[in-house]
Image 1: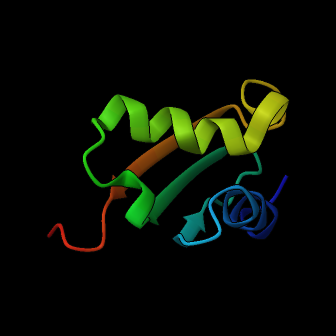
Image 2: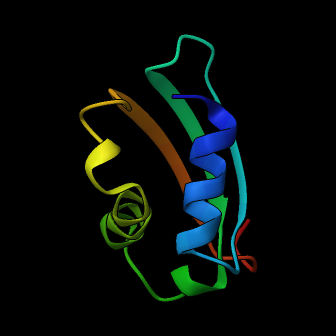
Amino acid sequence: MDSKSIEQMITAGLPDAEVSVSGDDGVHFEAQVISASFAGKSTLQRHRMVYATLGSMMGREIHALALQTRAPDED
């Protein structure tokens, strides 16, 4: 697994999102996801939305994913 593939999967599942993923070891990644879809949602709800875009890859090909999620109007 690589950062670019994860970025593409998140963007496919959240088309309005601005996504940036990093990680060099192939199993541990960090992602920043900014999406209008997150407005009014809790951190847990936002993370679940991102995890849903990755499906069964989470816990398998992607061992760990640290997330920073926010709506565009949040600082």
